[in-house]
Image (cartoon, rainbow, N blue to C red; front, side, top):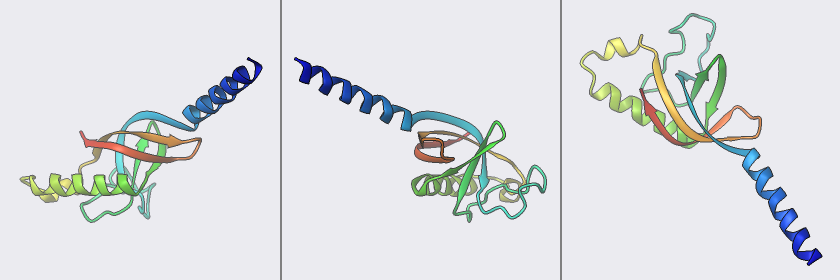
Length: 119
């Protein structure tokens, strides 16, 4: 009986720690070019384009990076947005709002993206 209790306690601790380490969450914020050379250069300095390959998201003033899968999803979404736009030049000066569902590993600023949608 004692062995069963110890096994259960160990499994419960592991499950709880795993849940904390990979917290599934949703983020909504502004999609930005993660390679932006001038993040302090004004509101539109880091607006991503379909040619952008590394993305981030600003949520309540905190910057997060997207994983490779998230970068691919963001780039694909921006290319589709540009393809269906009546005025592609206007897109270069329009902030891009995004909603992301994914996991954040521990206290890192990296989001492992499951779903991404432009708003």
